Length: 168
Image (tube, rainbow, N blue to C red; front, side, top):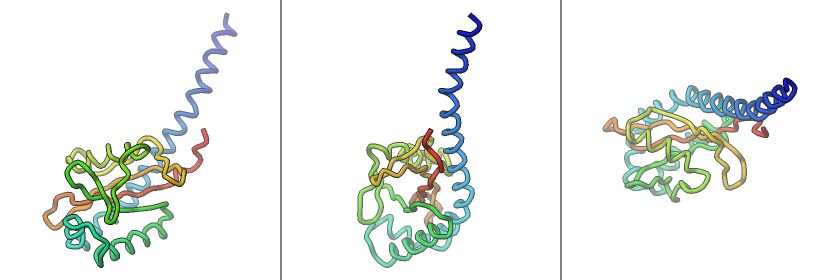
């Protein structure tokens, strides 16, 4: 009897351990990126508020977009992020200049975080599950508010990061 109980307990531990490790990896990647990027989001809000306001009102690929894209590209390079982009809200939909944002499917966890930022329930967050991109790479997506000239959230800075080993 004791052997059977020990076997069951050991089996439960074997199934639970990978889930705990995965959750820890997601938390670490999300919190680290939030801490690293909070200052960058503040700088973007302060120095680029006018460009962001313009893009939020008319999301086209123009000089403002190219300026912000260059800034985000530099952040990706320096911080070794997979991808970063700004999302704007129009009604209940989110978009990036030039394309609709893929909120469906694997990106639904991102919508949850972005909704909370726009509603004022949080000042940043990250997905609690991995997001599988179109290229099948699995990432954690961290989201931070970007404020316009009226000090209201006009965009959300999203950063995709590699959480490390996720093969558990």
